[in-house]
Length: 407
Image (cartoon, rainbow, N blue to C red; front, side):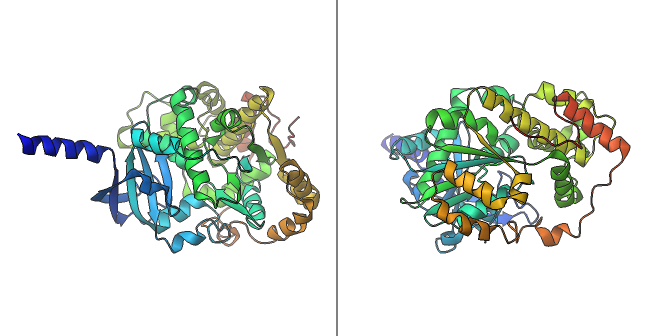
């Protein structure tokens, strides 16, 4: 009996610790961090506080567990250099050594013990293909700044861990707020203590904006955008060859059809191209583009839902400074100067920021300038334009060939 009680006590203690999982296989073509990126075997249990080390990064946080990726300590020293690793989530996957799972309750305990962080933090939300990675390079060039370029803590939880839930409702809950706050505190803990922080957000992160302004009111928020037509052309050139979303449209528009093993992929694509914005509005918009919306139409849906979401947040009183890509192209020094003034950076650093814009901001990624040259361009047809304009009209936005500017 004594031995059994000891075994039970030891089992309970293990539940309060982090579980280290050794990677035994990495899927060759899966360059993103997500719960299905690796085959794993259990290695050992460790104290949860170990995940606060500077070479361990959070991957996702759910109701029950938080997952972290451990890097080689030497390699991790350059992981936040955006010239080497423009997108953090890609770099984490490629260089993962181990995975660590932490019980959610234990994670909440250690996060609650982190000191209050009052450092300057600048967020950048964006419409994609709008120069947002250039801004990561600009801030990366500044002394005493740490850049988190698209950590995907929430994106992968929402995309891969859940396939049957209302994301918009979830974002209104205390549960979601706690997950957001925990992930922010964990990342702030990774930055050198004397550094300011620039954080480039990713898909589905837009729901975090009200929580950031509520829980971290000293953080400043930027929003980078570009007119829809050049954005769509750029997106098509970068990603259309991957054919990410066309295979699911038939099921999205005909939800009564059996989905089988494609259920999770359908959900992932839908979330990625709507940002978890109102399902009713997004379905109305994409159905108006029938028949057979293609890559360009899906991107226009993404652009329109993102613009609409940020518009609504601005109208509700949230403080968001918008930056238009076209302005950055014509007067880069002026725009950089305005942004630096807004986030309290001395204007004598503008020249340094300008120098950072002269190189390919996404060099080394599979969609950098060299790779994009090999990809097909969008072919304009009257039918494709009609579909795109139908989507834009559903969101009360200007047509494909019109310029758009935030009020």
